[in-house]
Length: 393
Image (cartoon, rainbow, N blue to C red; front, top):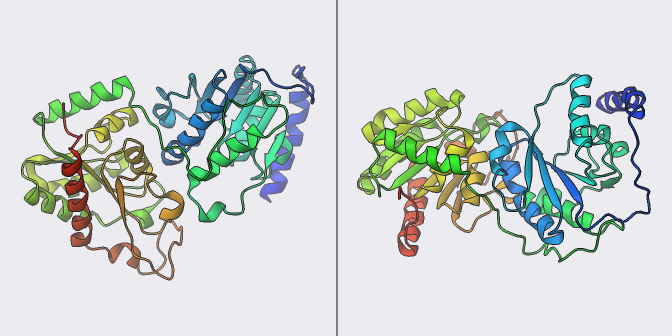
């Protein structure tokens, strides 16, 4: 059914799109070294962060290119000051065909030579096809092959390697296309680049302001807890255990403050966690934008988190981290950082990748507070040995 609807959608738009002036680029043309590249960003924060090694690889391959990122507003801060990105274009999605044509028209006016699609979705290919960007590269997924000029086969090892490799593989495939200018380097797929992230200036200043308003003294040890996960409750360690962990850390780490992160939807949950922590527990759920959250996470001495977008933010900022995994697979989506520990119990049913556990939730309920606390203290010990770099300066 979905394939038929996608095909019907393409046919219904062909007549409209054919009225737009076609591209003058012929099949045999080689693109200029200072080509203009549009990168369609992933829609999820964590996925967007995991594309940053691929973006850096793209920049190294084509240092003279102008690279623009088309991103949903909530992931924009990931790219605002990224060293590989020249421009971030907000993508405000509207399901109406007329709205898509408006977006496509604005992209077409920018004269992009090439579009690279990190999302697997049909919609991401449709927009750049309507924009008449002459070269459109993405994985051959979601019935969109006809909209791409280069439909890259999904790697066989996709489900057994980290997603960082998935995005790097797409950029590597571009290097091999005969119409691309000669690259300035290679991509080492065995030793991929690290995640890269720069906290926007207003994120840094906002984080300092938030801590000042909370009355957190300078030089305070900061511990972050992130009890939510957008994907679903199967990824979430119980709130009462986060609270117990916070109390245990406060007992062992004299004077530390606990920052609890989350969206507005997580505010009651974060409130329950903070209630037993007293004045040194701070509910920040729904009180920061992503840039401010990035700024605060960059100041942490330790971050304890479920598998979530903010987990990947912390990994990219090289914050000492303990990541708790349940229904998802750390091999594919674990923190891409040497400064992290994953706490997970291997079960016959895991990773199930389900949003809600249909069984007994043993993958999370089996993880005790003491086990996570031990991992936290090990990370703090390493941080002290290396010289703690968190806190307010």
